[in-house]
Structure formats: structure tokens, C-alpha cells
Image (cartoon, rainbow, N blue to C red; front, side, top):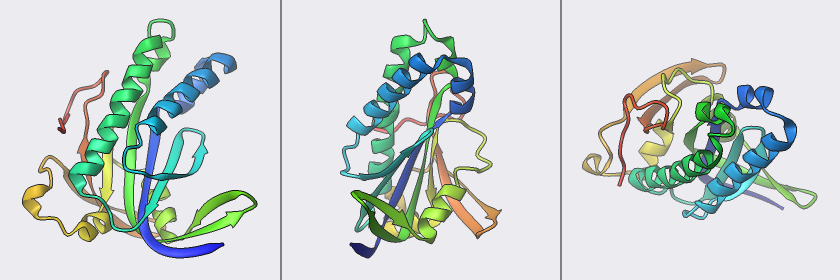
Length: 197
């Protein structure tokens, strides 16, 4: 089965993951990450499908028109609050948890979905670009990065888009990628923080 459509790629990524797995035992590390990922998935109120869960990230996607910027920011906020709640339950026992934070990449474009055995995978330049954007120069640990392609496709009234974002472009091996990032408050860091909803 193969389908070509336009859609949204929404990657939710745990910052600080590499240090975390180096400093915690396997048993507790896996149990904590499982709870964090389950919490994020349970807060998926916009009906995203999951393509992959790998390492420190969940790759969500959905076909069709993109949702508004305020709604995508509220979706991330819901996931972030649940993530922070799960961290707080165990941060006294495992101080390394205080260094974990959450970020998201939101991109839009052509996506192909294909079946491999019983699993569905995504393919295409949109996915490649979204993965490249995980490595960016945003000077924060907790934020939502929304690409120019996504913003252009929403056709929103500029008055309806939060004005607290910061726009920039970066050059990657795939070309110039432009985006706006929206800072969120981290429990451990509160600079340039925003409040949505």
C-alpha cells in the first residue's frame, strides 16, 4: 500500500537524552523513558499517527491540511506539561531528570506512506528536512520550531499567529530552511519563555 499526500510531520524530541542514558542504569532508564513517551502519546489530542519511536524522539504525522499555529502550540504545551509532571514524580530520586526538556519540529509538505510488513513508514524530502531541523541553532532547550512551509500553508491571518516567535533561516546539506521558533518555559530554565492558552 502506498499513498502520496501533503501532510504534517510533528517530531517531539527529548533534549538531554544522551547524557541521561549514560548516567542512569538501564532498568530505571527504560522505565522512565517509557513513562515519558506514554505520557506524550496520551496527550496527542490532534489525532496524529505515529510513524516511529526511536531513541529520544517520537515521529508523529497526519495527512491533510495543517492545523492552526495556536492549536499546534497548544498541542505541544499539553505534551510538555505532561512530560514535566512525569519528571517531577521522580526528580528527587534521579537528579539527572532535571536536565531533560522537550522540543518539537513541525513541517509540512509531500509525504509518502508505505507498508513494510505490518508497519507503516514515511518517505520523502519533507521527512528529511524535518530531521535536519532537529540540529539547529535555536539557543533554547524547550521550544516548538515551525517551518516556513507549514506557516505558509495555514494561510492564517497574521493577527491570529502568536507574535512571540523568532524567525531565522539556516543552510543545511538539503538547502536553506527557514522557520519560526516559539520558546516555552522549562522547569529548569525560564529565559525567553512563552505562555500559550
